[in-house]
Length: 469
Image 1 (tube, helix red, strand yellow):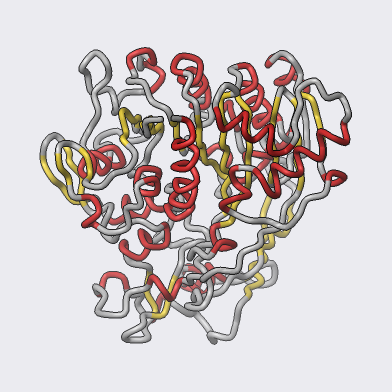
Image 2 (cartoon, rainbow, N blue to C red; image 1 turned 90 degrees about the horizontal axis):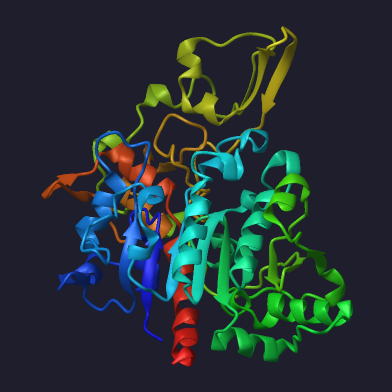
């Protein structure tokens, strides 16, 4: 089977880099519109960001590295609102990949305020479904935040159930796994939900059924749980690449999806675990524990060892407002000054603050401390789109050469995600090469996926595609 890809909401090319093993700038040398040595051919992509009023930085960075793609009518629609794109004009492909925007489930907002499939970003799921309906690709690989499985807070599991039902209606079997990149040796503690779907008429789908003894006509629940446990822990797409401990049939929860999307949307709730599968409209899910014995990378492995620009360093007066040993403040007793709050010690420390609710009720808001300086010998924390801003979630580190405290460089944020150094430095905008602003470079990395995870999945996909010939 030809390795052709459609990449939806591509960002700056995480799927493309991962599938093709692109790790350095030299791996992206262009020839004939494609990077030299690309194993997977991208036939079309979509990267239009409605929040960007002027420059579409993600799209323009992607095009700088990889060029663009024309639709079947000869038009470039890669930077057009996906809802306005005629899906029948997308060139045929065999693998649909997507990191569809996840702000409506983001860890940066509370679960109670997450809007799921109803939010501005969440509704892009329906464009993915339309592509599935029109193009019918044999295989699909999607990525989103782990909270997707619990959305929305008022009806946990509804949104993911709707997605599974959409795949069911189009004749797909689905596996999913929540993967923390650091659990498999990569330098960031980043948990994301990955979803792999195969059309039921593929060789791979039939081979999986035989491997686990699955029979559609089998009514014995215990036998079906046994098949599902085998997929989740031994025989499935994710099990082969990201090994976990054994799963017993008794650990597998089952639930049949409602027939209609309307009924599912109105009343469906379910406690999805971090791994599972959906086959013939039945959900099977179980909690898994990673088992990994390989090399483990840390934040220190990707940090600069030479000179770093002065702009990244934090002035001494912005670090601490009192003794460095103090890790908490209690403003329910005494308020701090604006200057004291404008320090990293305050941002990173535990806090107690007097707050007033909308109804006039006073209460004390509390939050715990996080490490002031991120340690070399651990993976980085999850990078958010606010990386580099004056925020408790921003990484600050001790410079390896000088010992001074600074922010991460743009290149370090790229390497944390597994991109080539300076991947986000340039964009091709209106035919001109321009530099991407530093805050946008950090945003792109906070919004990106971990390339190393996709690279490992790409190796598994190569074997699957070889068997489809």
